[in-house]
Image (cartoon, rainbow, N blue to C red; front, side, top):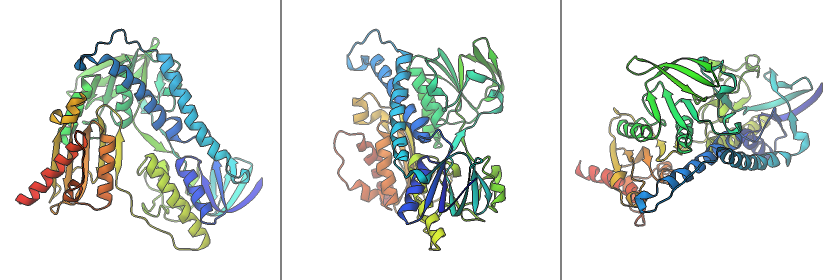
Length: 464
């Protein structure tokens, strides 16, 4: 077995792992990067990018079919499912290729292929060929789709985000288990591509929305395009002919049944921690074998080991994975050198769902009983630019404290991906509604709706 030693061993070459490796080496540490493959990052290979490519195709089909509002008549819109998926894969592969090129550009001696397993708190093995002794290690092993027990016997009839984009053609019908961000994105896109879609979720909300009125509006909007069943429990699933049959109970306790060509499990992703041998490291392990760790320094309790990205299951989105990787890599180098570590403040929470209308949650979450909050609202049904574009659905809810300092928001509407960034930056800078309102907003734009909500907050403060 080859023997290696380094300051920092990074396990995983995804977004967080690559950032950790680069941060460690930039801090002067000797580092190695262990990757079992296939590489290319979750976002580029099976997450953000292929899903957005599918959504883009669905958006084109939906726009072509819905031009009558503007007096434009389009006939004969057809969806070539094979061509749609071929473009998804071709562009996906280009994004993945860019990531792999970046990995290949790293020093060959620093890259070790295989599956890592801790031997103790200071060393790990890679398969049966290499033993690495380290001063600090970073776990950046990413995550994998979770599959509920009733779906596990369906074989190739079961799809996850890891397999969905590999199918050669679009199915005629699809059942989606889960109405969270991924589930509702894929469900709406597939419906707009002409597929009969049924969504089943045990919860009461769609796309992660928790503000009651926005959650209600979202359910109504998406139900107009697909069969959406909230508060439903999946009882069983079985192969049936060339498809699947799902037995489930609706929110009123009635037994229901759905048949579809394929079923997509969109019930979340679990950290890839199995097989790492964490029990021999001295780490304090919690539920599911998750190490206890500090969310600012990312240092795990009990050993010189850090955890970052989807592996820590805290904020499993790309921008957070990249930042966490950088923090973990720099702190691992500091531990290895005996220097003080840093504990940066977390970024303002920012999550998005790229449906139509879009959804976002920013900053402090909605809390019906939170004391001292003032809420500003916008109804997009009457907002000028939204009506011009025929995208007048949904609304905004922005909350601030009694002094007007912005705290958080939930959004459902057009251009939300841009509005959410504006608000996230304002919250991160500690700005008040009045300060943000006192900035230029061009007319006519959707951002004017943003200004309306801020004005409502400032007026409430003046009247109190």
